[in-house]
Length: 159
Image (cartoon, rainbow, N blue to C red; front, top):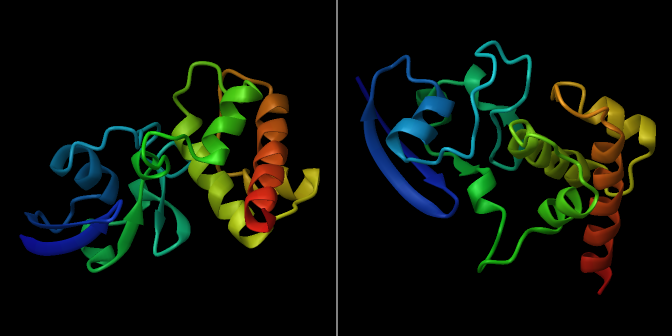
């Protein structure tokens, strides 16, 4: 057993967990943050993407003990004061979702992509989302949502 302390969505949590506890299971089972989905258990689908110290990470491929002391942001931490984050708004307005299962991971991957590339080309968007799979859409509206997200975030920085 190991004791871990993580700051998740701005709240510090200290828990004792088994050494083999995956970050995704810690978030879902220990903290009740079920917006981070488990899709494949092999880090292929990206449904479990969260931010660890500002970087997009597939939480099914990281042990909770490996990120002891880290700052974690999950999909639940994106909206502020009941107002959707611009990326969440863009996915909704552009219909960048269908069943919604992949959406939290897509949004978190998009946030990571736009952090590094505030004005990505379509090719950069496609490459940036390579590790996130959607089984329902044809990705066209997801790409549109990322483009709109970039525009909204640029306006936010300059406005």
